[in-house]
Length: 205
Image (cartoon, rainbow, N blue to C red):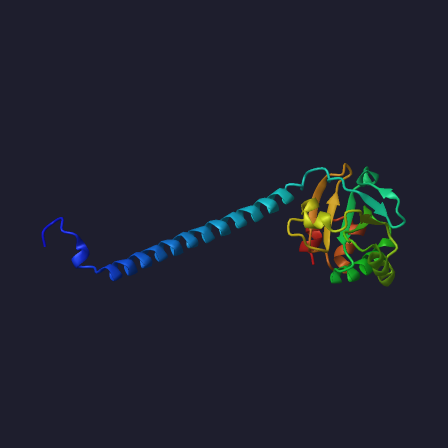
């Protein structure tokens, strides 16, 4: 066949249309796959950025939020200044939190090495009150006026939005430690009565 002769003789019109459709389909699939990969990468990057932004709160003064006591009186982290403090975050829907409140109540009767406050990140105040009654916890309890919002927005270095959750502040209200792993009575004894860092209590049990 001479150079320059059209290939119509080799590819009838129906076959050419079929080939064109297949090529277009492959291009669409390729573009779709590329978009999925890009989208997944963007989601992953966005998640990691949120986690890192949350963890950056460690070493910084604790962020202020609206807080109240069970009887509706305004509370503030500034009340804790001057002494190291342990803050335990919980909610009425958090099953492990029930045992922890019972454990803390036992240790709370001793002389503590730190300030101790438990803060409910819960939208249901009546459920929190019922939980405290059920566990027998009578210690200092504050409510986040925004309910679960601090949890959902990863405040206080809670990068993974998990409860129960514990943080430790120094005497200047700087968030120096956090943990998801203070669970046993022995660990709480070390943290509250012996004044051990959260990391040491976690490693030791």
